[in-house]
Image 1 (cartoon, rainbow, N blue to C red):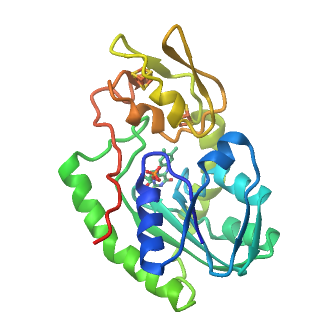
Image 2 (image 1 turned 180 degrees about the horizontal axis):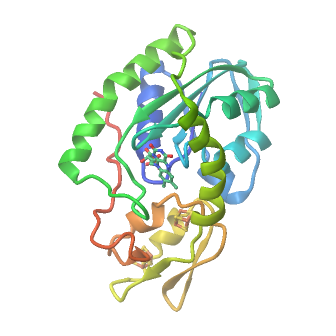
Length: 252
Ligand SMILES: Cc1cc2nc3c(=O)[nH]c(=O)nc-3n(C[C@H](O)[C@H](O)[C@H](O)COP(=O)(O)O)c2cc1C
Ligand code: SF4
Ligand code: SF4
């Protein structure tokens, strides 16, 4: 079973690609996370966890959700981490998570997809995004073949810097950067409520037709990138930047 989390659609695209190629089903963690419900799932085919990379690790909300859940049946677990550039070294934590859940760790595969972290970086423009998405195709294809053959993913090559990024830098990132305080909304807001519906943490409510952010944000970028009026900014960091949303996966 392919189990995924996404903010702006890359990981859904990757999950649906794998589900299609493996003839398996896809489960979105959105409602489990939003409603605080532990997943209780059964699959007789390998577990494939697909999600974005946040600070060179699995997003904490995803690790927490997996930790809380029951994954019965097949014991093999693969991690497919979509990323803008690199995943650092999330292997020790992914292995430990498998050990906790009595799953057999079968590897972590980075898949470079368009960058979505417009609070800090730039998202690609549509033509470049399409190019990056096309380049991800063969990587996903190889992943599907490896999972179908029940082989391990290739060993991730890492160095000391990767360990630092996924270790102390990840901790500092969550402590100092992952906050909703800098979100603002402009007069362009049309009070449609889409940001409320998109937030996987239930962190946004409308007051007088305008969004208000609470303090459970995980910086997934779904609200700012999904606003149809482009009315949301993240401090000065997001100004003038393209909003990114992955197009839906279409079966060839
Ligand atoms: C909070 C946050 C942290 C991120 N950290 C990393 C990172 O450490 N390394 C990286 O290559 N990309 C990083 N990215 C980029 C995303 O992992 C990447 O664009 C991913 O494919 C987005 O997936 P989604 O569309 O399924 O949400 C980060 C994005 C966000 C929003
Ligand atoms: S999605 Fe955008 S336009 Fe709609 S309520 Fe939220 S901020 Fe306003
Ligand atoms: S407030 Fe926005 S960025 Fe934060 S978790 Fe919700 S949708 Fe994601």
